[in-house]
Amino acid sequence: MANRSAEFLAGPIPLIALVLLLALGGGFIVAHTTAGLSLGAVLLITILFTSFLNSELALHIILLSMLLSPEFVVGGVGGVSLGKPATKGDVLVLRMEDLILVAVALAWFARTAIFKELGLIRKTPLNRAILAYTVSLVIATLLGVFLGNVRPIRGFFFTLKYLEFFVVYFMAVNYVRDERQARRLMTTVLVTCAISAVIGIAQIPSGERVAAPFEGKFGEPNTFGGYLVFMLALILAQALSARGLFAPLGWAAFAGLLALPLLYTLSRSSWLAAVPMLLTLVILSRRRLILMVGLGALVVLGPLAFPKQVVERYDYTLNAKVDRGDYRIGNARLDTSTSARFDSWRQGFQGWTDRPLFGYGVTGFAFMDAQFVRVLVETGLVGLAAFLWLLWRTWDVAWDIHKRAAGTWYEGVTLGYLAGLVAMVIHAIGANTFIIVRIMEPFWFMTGIITLLPLLLDKGGPAQAPGRSDGGPALVA
Image 1 (cartoon, one colour):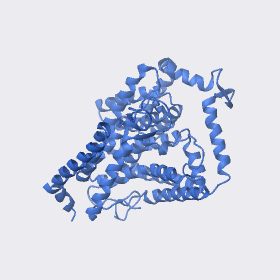
Image 2 (cartoon, helix red, strand yellow):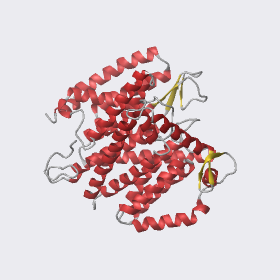
Image 3 (spheres, one colour):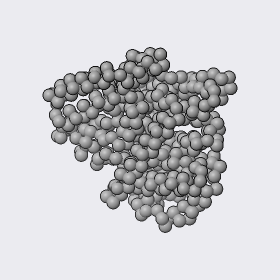
Image 4 (spheres, helix red, strand yellow):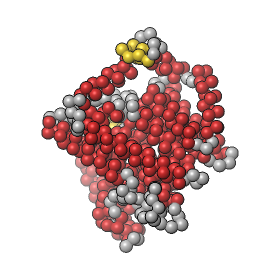
């Protein structure tokens, strides 16, 4: 039974069926749509059937698409175009990775429906927390629709967006079975990161803030900055845990490749998140002295080495004489942008007091760029408690596995993940970090890999879940 699905998919019947379906579907699409839409639709159909035949290839496609897939606009003057709209208006902006994830998820559901032994959702230590958070979102949004705060269609699709990252998590824990698979997939994560960083560096001469690839005129530097901080944590941890001379230097050079576009995002939330990320590495790494020396040199030489735009961004926040808001840090008045963010938080807290238990539902309140306040006002104390429990369980599981991974190749992976998790929590103070596709897809994929590590570490016998000593299943809810 265990090999039945693999034997079937390796045979000629699925390949013949794939060719026929692609031919029929492709012919219909070409006959009824424009050339651009035809190419995109055929690509998605190809990904759908390829994912059905090869689940690991599907994960590689998702990992590459997280940062390297374009957005496209439906509507407006141009019909269909790549990148964000040139002018803001009544148009629909879609991310290509959203559609790819849907295609791969459909293939996953079809595969598990046909081959029952594969299982749809594997038991893991995070299942209960994920379920609690999901239920809180659904209940809060349904109540918001009932009370008239949430438009049903908008609330439905935004709730799906909040939850789509868990699909990546469960695909990782369902499909990855051995160390070689894990290493291949993490290599794809790193290659995607390197390409994205190079594209970011190429944007620097334009004088604009650096954003993620293919985001067009209205890019999101804060999103790219959050992604770079998370990946920087993983790479710096590898530099601190790598053996020999050349491997640490190679990882350090990779970290420098990411640090440059991170600075030019001019994202203050991302810069702020980098501080506790580095402190976490200093506290937990056995080679903390190396990092402390590097950070000391950065503090001393920073004012001379930092680009002009970075210094100006810092001065604008605290020291500029114009565009000042009503909030102060000591004797310095914050800029109007930061002050407006504080105002939105205050409005969120005031609104929450009217709906303290379940909030207004997803999209039921005014937009605010702050994850924790947004969770509170949209889902109330119930949703915030579930969200915090999910974060705590994620840290707890990763910390237990980090202790078990000491002295192995995975020590750097777990160390970097812990530092990255701390960074994401801080980044979420000034951004909607945990609902941003280009940050959360790699984050939840790496969460899946971390959760799987007991299976990869316990090669000599039955794998155990973090904290278990009874020889039970490796991954339990």
